[in-house]
Image (cartoon, rainbow, N blue to C red; front, top):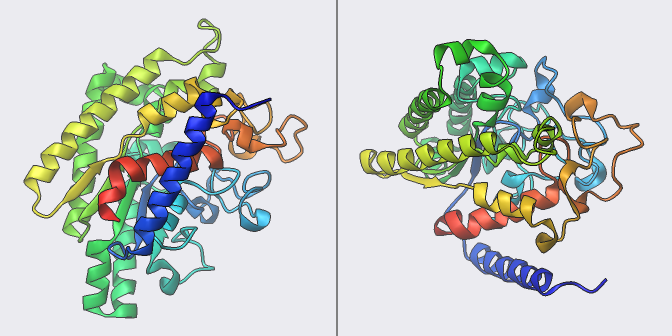
Length: 356
């Protein structure tokens, strides 16, 4: 089948972005490290080393990763921070801080503190016994001390100040906590009240890492979470379409994050906080998959693609697809490697290019 005009235009767009990134990275060096906080959208394997069910360090996860290794990334391959790191002329994969296979010499140019299943709200991390956001900050403090011991005060402080901090978190607070358990809904009768509570926690977190030296920060909120295959699978009344309620919550929350970004950039001297909102791009991929070279957007590649993620993503399932590049989603909750690469390119071009 011959490619459509839209598909040709998209291929050209990708080609031009690759040229732009190549030119930028060949003369870059302004960002010496990528430092990552957040949830499963950016976790490169920290949950492998804690007692939790929220793991993905087994097949078929990682089957398209270099050497086909299941690293603990909730993907068939690499995830967004890996692509962003590579685009900045740094390593093509960012190691997890808790992985004993790596040391401070590896972490000096990139490190991930993220934990799948976590959120801004401490009670969200309790759902799957994962690392709360405050603990991610504690690991970062420990990292800073090791960096000083390894490189000395001056060099370590330069890395901390000039590094690009990627923060991606929020979805679990709504889907795994607020809409699943009654505690927060009793405390915050309207979801708007809970959004405001999370915005307060986000502000405190940004202030914390700012006080610890962070200056260049990319903040990503929620995707169109009503279009995740898991949410579509249970949306029977709308014939398994996207849940508009959940999408509207994501839009509303992301809007409040955008206002927070403007507020904090005015208040904190030297802060370069970026509203790296990926909602529109992801929604476009889901609603126009063929434009981006995908064939399936309603279900994930793993298993039936409707409910499976984590341990439910069985390596022996006969239903798992053979080519994840045809799928927008890898499992019922997480994007495929190809989707992550497209979104990363978009974020770099639209929001992060000023740091190159």
